[in-house]
Length: 436
Image (cartoon, rainbow, N blue to C red; front, side, top):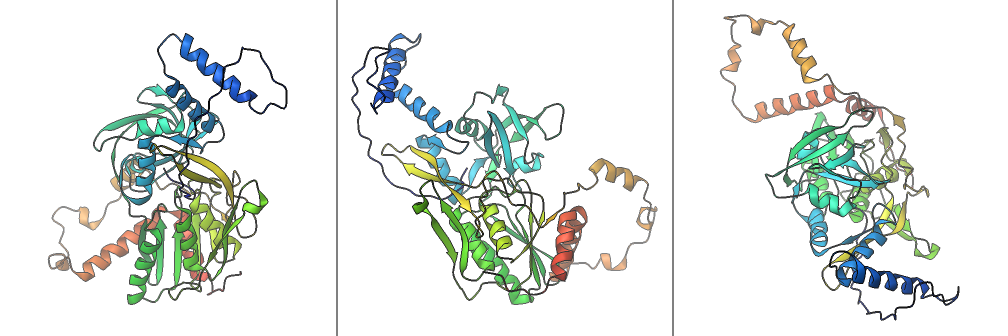
């Protein structure tokens, strides 16, 4: 699970030798080591008197975990395995069910399911509360521990007790773990010249995938407009969010980050490149599952007047995590700054509000469709009906593939009211020059 920016450095661990002091002893308000003395006293007491054997190393490691997890939902201690998994999620495939999760007031929340993963296919949605994992309550689980329990070998299953948003009763959902795909960009021609670009997450290859696919399309067909779909995108790498934004922008500010020190501000700007698409009309789709890096892209395009945003308010994950590796192979993930859009808006806990707030309207269920089909009677349903003469001659050639693509696009538009509106809007937009 990877969001935010990576700053990797090595930190030397210096041993601290603090003499235990009698309980209740105080050395004055100005003694900066009083808290450390108290910590040392408690560690010694637990090690000596706890009912089960526990080592000082275990106690200190657990104390570090607790210290970081109490700061915010995204700061955490990373064991050796956790640290390796964090690297895997940004650069290669990994095994699991494919969800981004967060912790809020002791509750485990689904930020977003990743498209085409087992979690997505099982119907998990942004805002779902995970109450139990394989029958174990999540109330006492830290975020990293919950991630470990949800992930596992490919082919094994995990049962999640889920409370959907607005539901009265939780339900059990059993999901078979699989390989989470690393392909992050999908394209689909909606109409001649109008292309949907769906970005499912921001990994190391996202910008290259996006530029390559758009380049391949423009070699055959002039590009008239783009529907950029960032719905249910849980985020990923900051540099990829910047370079994806830069694909549609000229040079200028895209996002900046700043910690508690005003001098720590760091600006991320675009660069002029020959294959930038700075004058093609764009409509961007967002929803509550759009988080972190996806919000950076949406915020930059909105602030720079480069794209119309349609959909629902985004998740509001606007903090930067710095990942620090430790000498023993473990590490820490620490929130060190906040993201700000070009106009100075903080994304954190606010999210990006679309220009047109249009809720997603779910298509009829399979049961409704079955019922409708049952009472829909056509020529093809008649017994001994004549076959279409051309059907026998149909071959899986270029024309058949094109027809299949058209049918896929038509079905997508029919089932997705937000996509349907986005297509209509992008067709009406003039070629615009973004505002810096």
